Image (cartoon, rainbow, N blue to C red; front, side, top):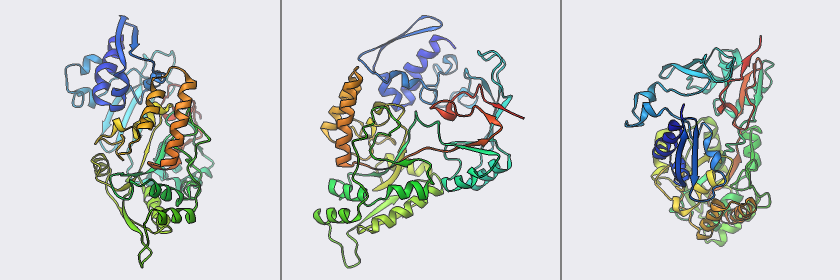
Length: 419
């Protein structure tokens, strides 16, 4: 790997392929290589979270000679990737497994400790559970295991369940509202929906304590979270009063209005959440119609604004400028998934996020972020539900699995198996 690979990856590869990276790397005035092992980057303005863009999940360094001058999406290296890590790509049987082998010339002497890593593709959640229970697999990660299966796996003497390792990503889930759909453009309606939801029930009875209730759009594990900014507490009576004040009277069947809900297609837990929300909405006279779809159709429809309500969750990447701002600033209202697809717009919110983005002083950034959190908690552009933490479940013989806030997204160069 040379400095030219780094510059190519930043200024061309990720700038073209990654909307989040594109916005950040647009702040680069120049990126030069004084020598083959040094990169010098000059920014157009202060940007405190800049270095947070360089974790492997956000800006992997790719080999320039294998991508330059080609279509980055179809180049041969996409099918046989080349990297700089402790394991090298060996084989990919689509729909079956990906096999990585130990790289003997890794830059850390004597590492990695493992001979190989095999990622098995197992579409069925119960088959994944059986694989980790019986030792067919030694590790599960992210949403491989449904939350309702976690208590039983915690009781297995051969397994360890760890919910650490997501601090950098700090995913927050919410009910995504399309503000173009009436009456979701009315702040009182959004406030009422938020108060109709028992987040403690969701965290404890659906997710079995894996994660905790969200109190505002910035996760408590993320820098600049303001604990004083909170959404209104669960209160069905107050929610009904707000809907009455907003002029939404119930008909003879007790229904004020109907909303369609696009279920997030990432496993059974999201279907169960949809059923709970249907019951919660009913308490305040809102009929929620659930619609199921596949992952590709979900992404297309949300990106095209073809929905009324759905569930979404996004990573925060250690700083609100990187992971929170994108959902609420009007400059990011795009027909692209994981942008401000809801269409929320508030010039003051735009101004505060811009202040936090451009300030070099952490105190000024905190003041701006605190102010914006208070506004968002008042206007509830989205209905925040959970500060999520995915369980990493692994055989107790597998050591050093979670050592940083990046969790299973690290290199695994010091992971080893005991007898």
